[in-house]
Image 1: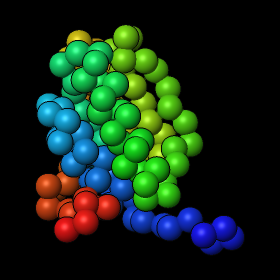
Image 2: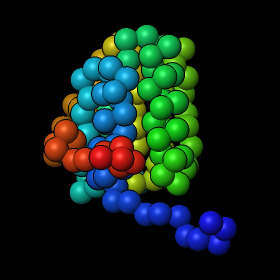
Image 3: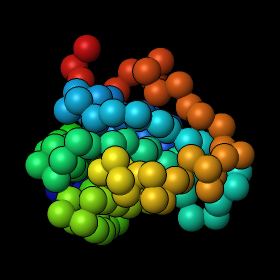
Length: 130
């Protein structure tokens, strides 16, 4: 309804929902890192690998559609699947979608190695109706 404030979800719930959507689209090596204690700009990173640019695009589009349905709009989307990476900035969570080569090159798990891994499979995704 017009005039209503957007629904607010926890950063963990948003990040884990993005991981579930990536999993539904058959992304590989899905990791959710709690970078909040280490970074000032976000609380969670979601990192996932798509086998090709078509799959990376499909994952990104599905994440954006799910979040739009929840009233969660991204602050920005960067990169292109053709370049091997897409970044979706959701404020409290940032989604990194990589080709296998780009994931190896950027190696965010090593860069943020001190971050705790969230058990995203244990968190019920938002908006799944169950």
